[in-house]
Length: 380
Image (tube, rainbow, N blue to C red):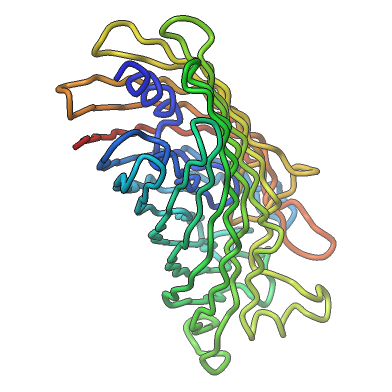
């Protein structure tokens, strides 16, 4: 029980609900499969980003841009069942990707007014884990995923596409997950590597320009990125755990090119995409401490990689991030554990751009987010 308390507190330092690189929200965590015994988890996260900027006058406007990103909440859950000392299975429900961005202002008198995007997702991952011995194990399974999205391009920065809208209906598809882990239980050491495949969605799409249809209904191929999660932990003293993680997501393959949009911009930008998200790497390191039989806490810091320059898509107006998170875990009974976390994130300065060549349209500096997460776990 002691190790479980400490591990739970350490991992809660991620403060569920804060957005990571690209469109990541949940980080596709599979940690429940490494817990002991039968276990049910339910989690809730909420994030309040503050993204403000100012247009740089490249279109003759210098409007202040406020409140671009809306607050959001995410739900998650998991169930692990031990079939034998060597074989266990788990089902994980999460919301892996999302965004809710909207620029205020008059599209006819501002660079980016009316631009926005909304992405919603839902996923169910079914996993099995097999232990060869106390040290080595493998895990893998299938991930069912649904995604829907809408994108608006507004403002003088988009020229003839000012007023363009693409509505992409929900689509479901299946990918796979596999990985391996090495453990030394006597020192609470675990190193786990998990690969998640890309998942390709064909979204039924309706395109309009200032409300008028501009093409027949079509399908837009969107590829959710493949990713690699490396998670590590080890005891460094009695009741003290050092933990860390690295997540890499290949967003450069995530292209969104609906039919009319592609035809409109292809002469100047062959292979263009509404989105332009670079591959992301998120790194975290922290320490957890058990204070007594019931309570444990953790402190972690994290880093999100920046792009090669400060130019970014208007639909994702941040460029890397630094964060600090504080977590805690309280064992209410032998079966019920309550955990929570808080995170403060400081985003890197960014310049939303459009056009060919890329032209900065605004400056986003000194932005941040506050997020919180809560989890209840029941063992049986």
